[in-house]
Image (cartoon, rainbow, N blue to C red):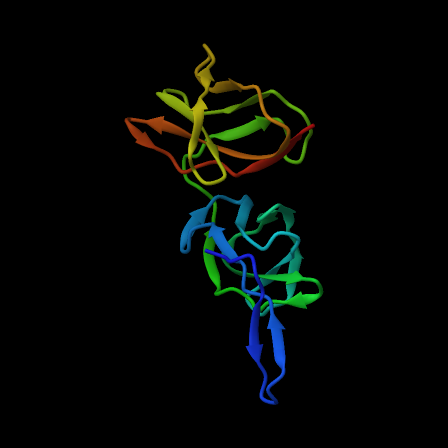
Length: 195
């Protein structure tokens, strides 16, 4: 857990030196597998900090969205092994980088898809997609794999629809279907904004 204060360390000449603590990465969980598309990276930072998400070699991938003491970064990833870090700056003083966070991006087998809303679209209330004929259920998942709810499978058996009153802000969702009592891989994640 992060503290709200910068740390003060004595320098070699006895003067006080201020450093910014390292932020945290809470998600994705180290070593997890994700479908092609968006992967949501999330963590904690100091109030008022700016956070950069870094590649394995500390080159900048992009700036995170900071909301209070939490931050997130979302982007579409190509297939492969991914290694990220994060670094925060407060009052122009950067922290060291976090430990590496490893995750894998690969095509999923037997995953359903999301057809509406389109990735990066704005205020949509209904999410729709396709599933395999005979799916017993389609579950809408949050970025952290928590279940938001079950979709309604349409009479044709290969499309589904999920309606919800969404709070304002950026939303990151994916779906999985239940076939023969077993959950499939999740779909690729999409992001949409409710204003």
